[in-house]
Length: 245
Length: 245
DNA sequence: CTGTAATGTTACCCATGGGTAACAAAAAGT
DNA sequence: ACTTTTTGTTACCCATGGGTAACATTACAG
Image 1: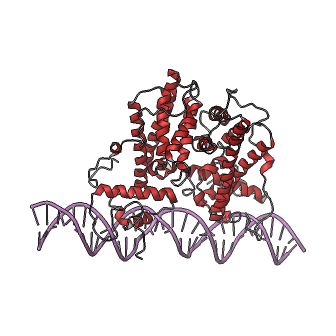
Image 2: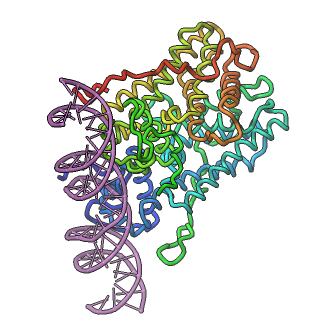
Image 3: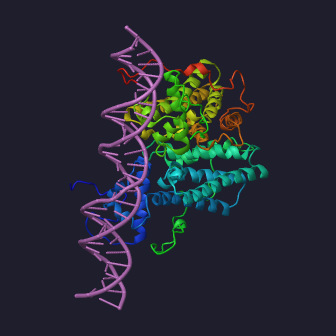
């Protein structure tokens, strides 16, 4: 009975004692635990009781923070989407040819797929979302896809990428990247960085107009996909009024 | 009551009349309908009642042909696996460099992903299978992955493919291909053949050791991925004894 | 202290859907 | 014809798990 280990993703609810700390930290703790469980067991097999149990609370307590299971799923998915969005924003801010931007995107996206929230982006089934949320998700996916195509197209224009069908090329690249979310294991042979490096080379060398140095030119690529502070949410309460998100 | 359209994948059970025909045809009809429903709604949302309804029968009738829902899922998955296996067998029988074989595989696999049973291969969650079946499925996946790696490795040896990490290269290629199963729509802009041609070029030109003609050399590539007769099952009764499969 | 809001808990409800039992009606033997 | 097997049907069972109600507890304002 007393044996249970202290729950892997450190839980703000210590078994039976001090229960303080801010609301948002708890919300996030729920999401971290949920995304992990959804990934390892699948959304339908993972129950809210499971999620609650890992957090040392009971199912109804979850309803203090979320409307229901689908909302948890959606917010997990959103976390991943925000990560991608900030990656894109960062790349758009910088300069470079179409090929350069594409390589940055491939590299950062590959690393993202090795994270829980990143993987949730491609392993969760949009059909499990409420119709409204599914719409948002579809739109986000479309934006991401459009970005791949845009980089490729502009690369063709500026001469850094050889002519090809941007749509299918984008599908091929995104597919290879998304698949990482399905096979990557933390205890596997390759580290996220190694994978990202190799994929960046492999997926773009066929597109490069001329023979170019293989490795991604590390102009300023940070080791982490993005700076920590970029993705914070509005921390305001909730509970009162709008379901806006 | 009489209005219902005749159900898209022609059903051997006509609404309320002649019920003849062989057992196996019915089994296959169940699988065709099931795979379609599982793909369009997802395994957990698609109910056996749904499946039965589309076939003009009722749920318990399905149990004349299958042990339960997971068996149906597994057999759908198996259909896809058999298709891939026969593709591989065919390629292995033929000759050619590592690169040539890889291209054939990419081409055939791409076309397969545009079929229901092919897509089921990558869109069904192995965790929904019984542990025994899941083992079989994992083994099959491993064989397929091994084949990709083998072609790449042998291509490196025979000089047709430039040196690279066969494992990651195989993941990248398989990922791009598998993703087709997620985005391909019959009513989309690109036909399966177009997709297969483009992917064959796109995914292998970066690997080719020298500049080579882009398009796949159509030595003998049949338009259909494989000959119809290759994949028939043991048609014997069942019911008595062995659960062997 | 004391009232109120925030957060938990225990004890339920109940829709869903896989699976089964018991029976009906064709097909197939004999 | 008659039994027997195959293949359906109708009518159930019941485990699961999301969601809710009612109550307990703690934090904090005043």
